[in-house]
Length: 233
Image 1 (tube, rainbow, N blue to C red):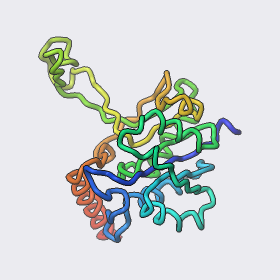
Image 2: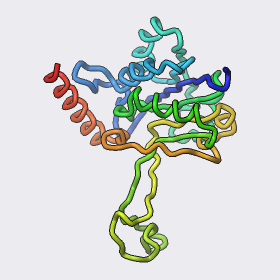
Image 3: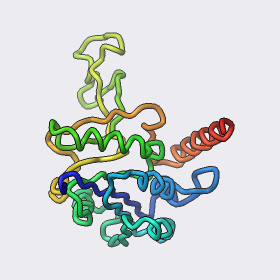
Image 4: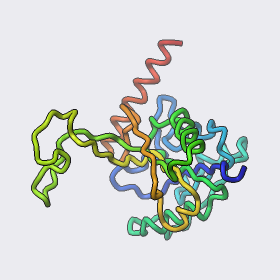
């Protein structure tokens, strides 16, 4: 059925200033990049009828090309440079994601969330495709700490009372691991619907690589996981 078809969208642009070359430089023990690792994760999503990779970065494009030769679902789009500038309106890029996707549903993933893998994607897709109570889903980190608002000069999630941490109203940080919604929402410049479901991440899944420190920490964890797995073989 068309309403069950899913496009997985992965994008990467050149010119990261906070962590240079983060998408295509070696990340794993055997030298795979974040882009290669993410491609290897999403090609394991059986329900994906289409996989779109959109980028203006030649290094990233060249890394994805070999995968497209054995998986026909992968379509490579060389993105217009106007959509890759630091001052490009986010809404314009959201519409781009919708315009290049041919399926009713779009799962928009990011290479900078290396510990959100195919098992997480499959679980999220199963919940999304088999539940009509919500129109979208996105990954979040649950925050249940005392959060201060400097403008209001108050803690925003304790109703003005000092309580045990577990009694605080939880807040949810969007971690950009994935967004899952209808294509028509994206075409209108939205990446969250009106009735979203929150997919709560845990542990390493919460990591989003934005800075050099983030990269180094995530790489340390990745190599530690690989070393542990090799010992158990």
